[in-house]
Picture 1 (tube, rainbow, N blue to C red):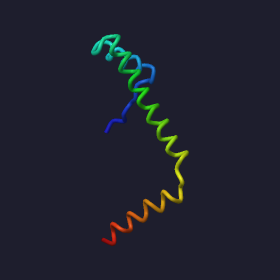
Picture 2 (picture 1 turned 135 degrees about the vertical axis):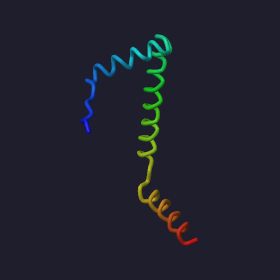
Picture 3 (picture 1 turned 120 degrees about the vertical axis):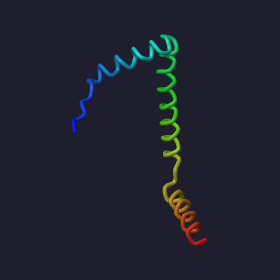
Amino acid sequence: MKAARYMDEELVIRKGIDLLMKGLGPLEAIRFINISRETKLDSIKRHRTWQQQLKKDAFFDTVFSEKNSDEAG
């Protein structure tokens, strides 16, 4: 079995951008790139906010008490 060889990161980026430009056109390619990044950042920001407000002990009590009641029933 042959070992897999990966392309250099710069080449992967260049080829990916070229394919986006050819397939979507310049405007939609840029829009696609920006939509992906914004969604991910919003998700991360939302998760960090949730973590900051989380009360660990209460969360664990809720999670494990529901699990135990499901197993008992």
